[in-house]
Amino acid sequence: MNVFRSSSIKELSPSYDPWDPITSLRQQGRHVLTSVEMTVTNLCNMRCEHCAVGDALTAKEGEMLPLKQMLDRLEEVEHLQTISITGGEPMFRAETVKNTIVPLLKYAKERGVKSQINSNLTMPYSRYELLLPYLDVMHISFNYVNGDDFHEVGFANSGHPVSKAAAYRLYDTMIENSRRLSGDGMFISAETMINYRTHTKLPEIHQLIRNMGAKRHEVHPMYATSFASALPVLSLPEMAAAIHELLDNRDPEMWMLFGTLPFFACSSLEEDQLLLRRLRTEQNVTLRNDPDGRNRVNVNLFTGDVFVTDFADIAAFGNIASRKLDDIFVEWQTKHPLNQLVNCHCDAANCCGPNLLVADMYYPNVDFKARKAITL
Ligand code: SF4
Image (cartoon, rainbow, N blue to C red; front, side, top):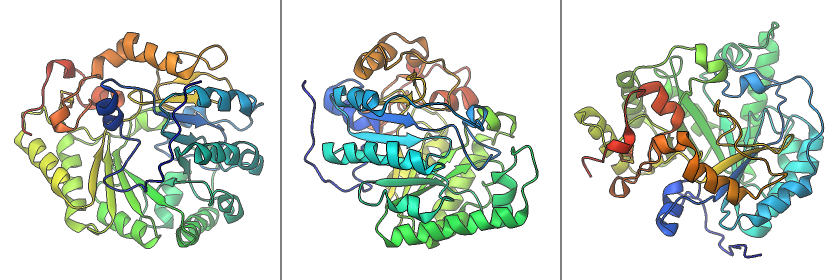
């Protein structure tokens, strides 16, 4: 088996983000699979109003596939550089942490592959502590300015009342876990989505994230999918104004990563070009191309089904029971009609096309394949 093993211990930084598909695209001359995301649970203690996988959340779940089956499929991925672990809340059950998450992270570490887990950080510290020797990025969502916000947003779809006191306990646990884990050397990357609630509060949210000890602040638009599909969508000028305000008020020493933004170098609007220029030239600010379907697939560890992401309403296009991940990815890349809609690439602009959901939300009638970057 010809599997690439990296001896690199390169640190993540604004100049090294292996999740960005543009790097492997340049190296290989085509998109290759470098990143595998795994859904390890559909359970969660929260029901956020914007949850992109809300409709998939369950109260009970069945047996997971044997871990060896997943590890064998990972081992076959020739250019693997990163793995991501997601849910639901991956840390919800202690057994999942012990029997699935830690072995996956150990595998990644041993192979020289970077790892990320998505968590709401409200679980007991003892579970997170187990990840300290192996994990590269603890990715959390943070969209609040206080416990009241957390209460309102985090349990909007619970279907039963959740007391303010209970929500505050979880909010405090999240903040305390973040401070403690950061102090113990964990790289916390806190993501804020820009939506109708957060767009006027981003500088305040940024400040809180900084105080929690996070090393990176990620900012993405809200994806109007699943639970979030009923929420108001921000206009593009509102979103641009929110980003400018955040840039005006951020800590310039903190790494800020903007992903899946709905602004592109092929836009003829001067304000879009201005915003992109600002994002490209500000210190410690990076723009990440969307990994979903570009260099990454999602595998559901209960069914073995392979998806373009954990949340898009696009049917599975393969299963690890019968096929290699590299083969499934090549078929998506070369044959799937949805990929053909957005697989443009303007190298000088560092851009390899929009996220499918973002394109659908803001540019339903635009043919990105017919466009080219304008200002470089
Ligand atoms: S790669 Fe696509 S989205 Fe990006 S600038 Fe070029 S045409 Fe626009």
